[in-house]
Length: 50
Image 1 (tube, helix red, strand yellow):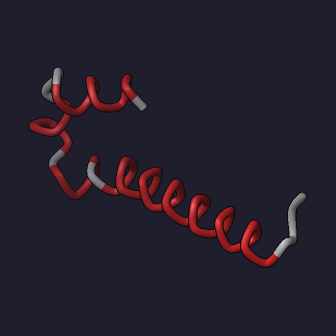
Image 2 (cartoon, one colour):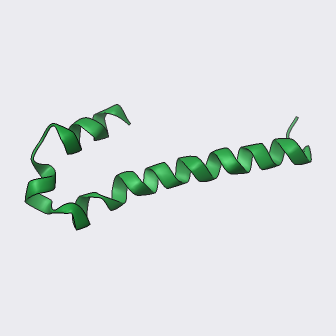
Image 3 (cartoon, one colour):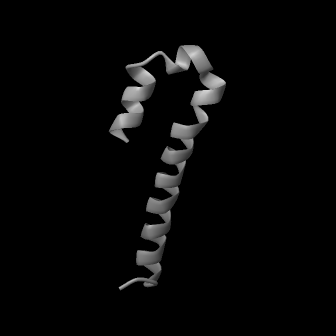
């Protein structure tokens, strides 16, 4: 995750490609991380995992 922050903040990729082309990827990764945390907490609360 650190490398992707550098790619977007330390290079001019955003200027060349534009926000519409570069923003969805890190947003998708962040969203999937949140979904996994929520699902893991739900599974632990329901006793699906040991």
